[in-house]
Length: 201
Image (cartoon, rainbow, N blue to C red; front, side, top):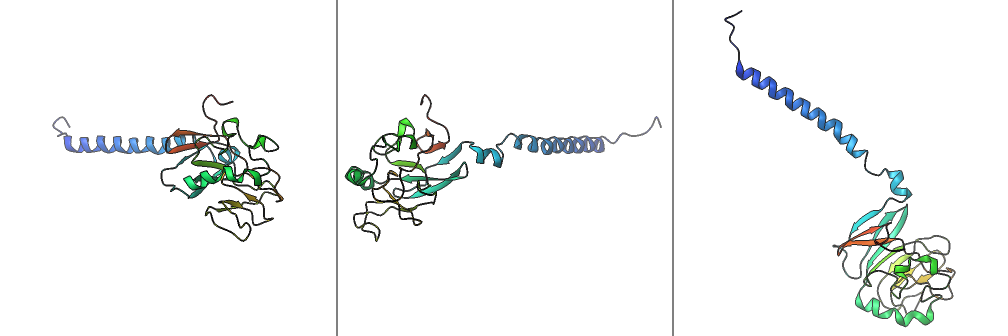
């Protein structure tokens, strides 16, 4: 046995193969562990923040994302849509959102556009009457439900109407403006829904 020849090539192969198999084992064990750190579906439904890129939303377009099992409307409002907002004040229940709708948005969104940045509307898409989801009717042209329509939201359930800031019109069943969720801008093209801006009350 003293004259036995050692096969160094085979030894290297076996050492390498063992290291690779061991490494794969560590990775396969680590992946579920790391995944367990992510919020569960239940946690997301309970209110975990939702991050959303705005980079592909063209002016006039709406995107809908889910937060706390609610639809959140994100709209890139056009200049004509924004310019039309002051002209609607006389037709609205609570144009300044300081009456019955005061609790429907955070303080940093208590302004004419009900937003942090005028062009971006971020709003929970639930009618304040009985909880239906209003449809986005962004075009500024006469509609069967309003000959003076300047864009906004129409609820097909009971015909409530809201302008491009989610403010409710007079003479409809909905009593309040639609709700603005807590949110902030992470950067110019990304928002996070569910978290107020730093320093906001």
